[in-house]
Length: 96
Image 1 (tube, rainbow, N blue to C red):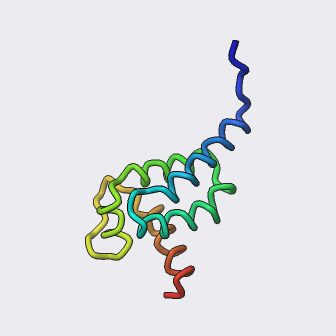
Image 2 (image 1 turned 180 degrees about the horizontal axis):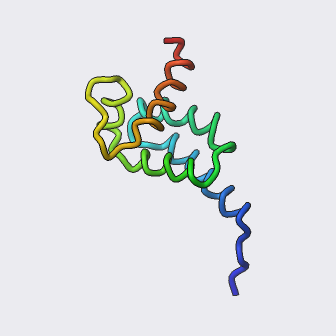
C-alpha cells in the first residue's frame, strides 16, 4: 500500500524536479538562464507559480533562447509576464 503524500511533500518534490529540469535543458545557454532562476526562486513559489514555470519550460530551448535574447517576439500562447521575470533575473545576474 502506497503511503499518501502530504501537500508539502508533493510541492517539495515538484520544486526539486523543476530545479533539476532547469539545469538539464539540453542546451547549455538555457541551463545558464533557467538554472540560476530556479535555484533562486523555486523554493518561494506557490503551486500557481510552479505551474507557470513548468509551462514555460515545456517550450523548446531554441525558441526560449530567441525570446530571452529578444531575437523574436514572444508568442501570445507564452506567459510573457513570467518570461519577463526570468529575463530580468538573468540580466541582473549577468550584470546587463
